[in-house]
Length: 234
Image (cartoon, rainbow, N blue to C red; front, top):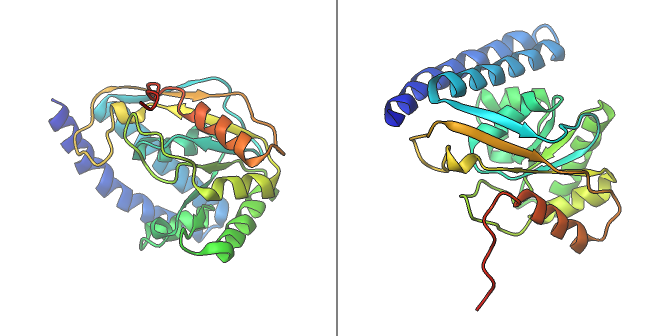
């Protein structure tokens, strides 16, 4: 049954996504607000496909923040990257530049207001990321970052990428860590998804201005709070 559900999801969601990308181009003719509405409509379509075809639903716990705040989340699947667009208040998502360069989809993502980051770009890439983040703050939008840098499998707890602490220090915003367990039902790199609820735990904000080691330790622990404890080294 899970194989059938997953195949049906792929047959409906991905062709439907192509139609929504076309809709963003049309929406763009009527201004950025119309384009953003088209992007959010695509996110709602994804939520409907996940719930109806796969039996996968989000179950948030805690307070979902809005306004200028830095949100640092665990990243285990495509599901949360899209569902956060609805769960939060039009977040500006920090993502790798390669995704923002995908023909069609990448244009829509950039026009929506994502923050592309070039991991090999050094200081110049960080400055570009900061300028884009500051523009999002001026619009009153939260900034969403996956500080481990990539999707990981359940149980994996890599160190935070260097860009997180730079963004935290430069923006001076509180950070809301988010733990989630999407990989349990939507495993990385696997075609077959399992039905079930995905828990999103919004932790209390971490204040700005903390030393790098302290903020990284607090965020790392919080976003991994749903993971099994790492056994001590022998």
